[in-house]
Image (cartoon, rainbow, N blue to C red):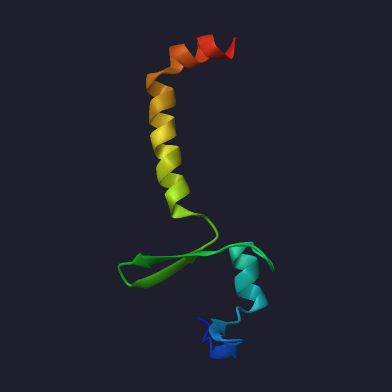
Length: 74
């Protein structure tokens, strides 16, 4: 567990993540991270949760329309 202190950054308030946390998330300066609500609070992830929903829908379409996509690929 890491205790993080809120700090003033310009006109905003921010959190500085320890390098161990950055390594676990596999992110670095300039990368985007996403905050989503979870059952026990807030979840931080380097993956856009909306993208996963879109990919799930795309996989379903690709599975259903496999023959059409195969013809189009030619």
